[in-house]
Length: 191
Image 1 (cartoon, rainbow, N blue to C red):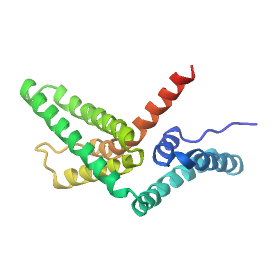
Image 2: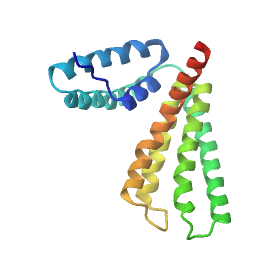
Image 3: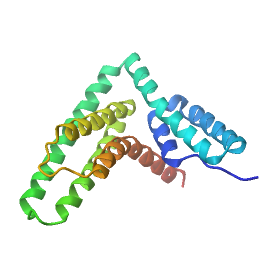
C-alpha cells in the first residue's frame, strides 16, 4: 500500500493556528481525510483539497477568536509586538542605508531576510505571551504588506515575486516559527 503525506507547510500552519486544546484532533482528522482522498482520487487532488481546507480554516478561526472572551487582550498584545517589529525593521533599514552604498546587492538581499527574521521572532515572542494572538499579528503583517504594495512607497518598484513572497511568507513565518520552536523544545525535553 502506498503512503501519502499531506503538505507539511499546511500542517504547520494548522498546528500553529488551532488552539492547543483541540489542535491534535482537528489536524489529525484532516490528515485522515487527506489519506482517504489520496487513495480514492489522486494525491494531487487530495493535496489541493488539504490546502483548500487550510485556507478555509483561517477565516473561521479568526472569527472564533473575535467572538471568544479575551480577544481584546490578544489584539493589544499582537499590536504591541507588531509596533516593536516595525521599529526594529525601520532601524535595520536605516542602518543598511547608512552603511551600504546604494549600488550594493546587500541592499536588495538584507531587507527581506531582516523582514522574515523579525516576523519569525515576533511570532515566537507573541506565542510566549499569548499563543492565540499570533493570528492577529499575522493579519497585521499581511495587511501592512498589502497597503505598502498598493501605495507603492518604494522609489524602485519591487518585482511581483518579491511582493508575492512578502504576502505569503511574512504572515506564514509569524505562524510557523512558534510551531517549529515549540516542536524543537518538546523534542529536546523528550531526549
